[in-house]
Image (cartoon, rainbow, N blue to C red; front, side):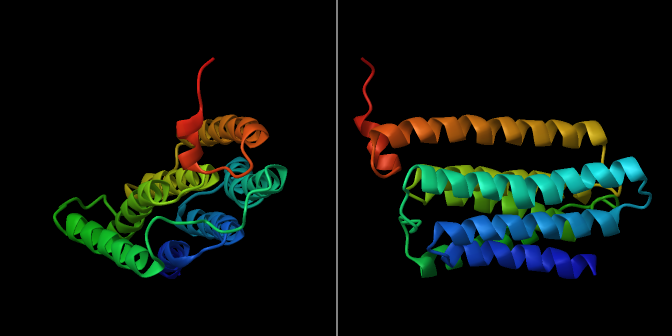
Length: 210
């Protein structure tokens, strides 16, 4: 069941690669949060009430509800157009995403470690690299925030790749870090939106320090 969920998570990356609408990105991020909850719930050997509450907060409440709602608010607040406006065609993005997954599979096959779950490792590395690719190939600044969220999900999966236990302090640090990052980038986007009609990375070249 866990492997089916991880494959589904991997499929969401391909879907994001060919998606054109920003709301689709937000919905996929919400879906990834739900998938991660069930993956963690099934993966943990022992789970107490406190740990379960923390997992719910980190995945369902934060990743699937709070962040998508906040990103949707930013779209309306800044009147950002619905199109993601990628630099590359969708077919090229799909090919590159496939190449990323193949490369991570080859890398995982070179690692000889009994404590490493290779399926988790492949999904984690693919998500990390895809997040970087998403940031590099999308015009709008808000898609960079979404790319950062994808990278954070990759880090989350990577924490499961090396064992069944999830140190609560490590995950708390990740959640606080991403919360602060999204908050700061949200404030940044709001300020940019007051100056420019459309939040495009090309517009940043017009900023001047007076």
